[in-house]
Length: 402
Image (cartoon, rainbow, N blue to C red; front, side, top):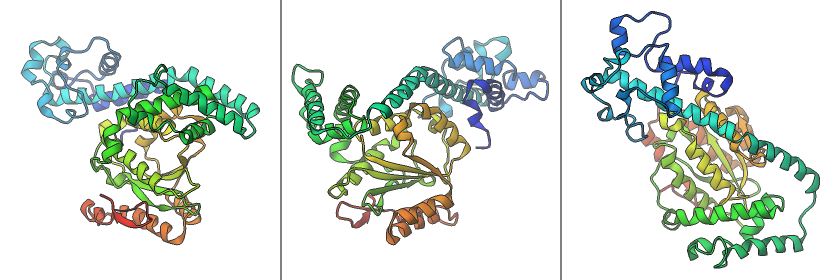
């Protein structure tokens, strides 16, 4: 956790990234390598280049061809080649790689791939970001009024026509199509400032997402990955979802179903006239797994927020920002729409407490602050904290979280 991984992000800091990759893999730039050192680990000078070449899809040391770098097997030593197997088909510079050295290589390669993914995401999205800025600028000039009823009706008819059998969404199941309601179309149009073309694309994405996630949407069953739950509502009766990273028990990808179900529960608890919710992400005690550095789960969550759960976000409050979390945020931030960025607020613990006290009544504010305080009490174990995990149901009653 002490490694400044956030220095990976940005092409201007490639030199620092190379030095860190060398440190991860066991190299030492301050002392020359003798024969024993060279046998135990690759040269610190050649390591970053080899790592980056392998991460780019080019040639890699043969010892690493059999290394399984998936999330599930990252920590399994059984997937690493044995020293004898490694040395039997090796080059002179890596003739005696130990199991520990190969494990370090695996870690370095994994991080390098994440770094390159972040860089490529930024490069690939540069043109898209320019288009978004131009569109935002044009929208601020031309869309300064509320859409008229005829305009909304025309947009809704055009979007719902996509459900006809001869149209792009005609092949979807009845389960997927039933979400394509007039109310959903109107939310998309409001979110996209009346842009029918953009709203139609999000409409397609949302219904395709619904069909792909039919099981969790119907059963609402999930693997418990943390304490994410509807903890109350604010003064405008918007549901408030709270979770603390200290209690995360599974990887980010394994927690996505719980996030979906929690948002469905928040929607169920919305009174008439309320359509959006508040998220509180308490990053205190974040324990980073290597898989958590992969931005893909966060990107998938953002995509579902922009399509299936469109116009459901009032604001997201992020409490604290560890160094490694900053690296992950920098990787996905270019992919976040400008309107969504405006709803995300980064706060210290003190700022968050004051904000919660002003936005929620005394009972709900006390419940949230009590959860924050409990998560910062090192005397309490995870099992003890679990006993207090309660959520608010659609009737406003406190019930066990699961």
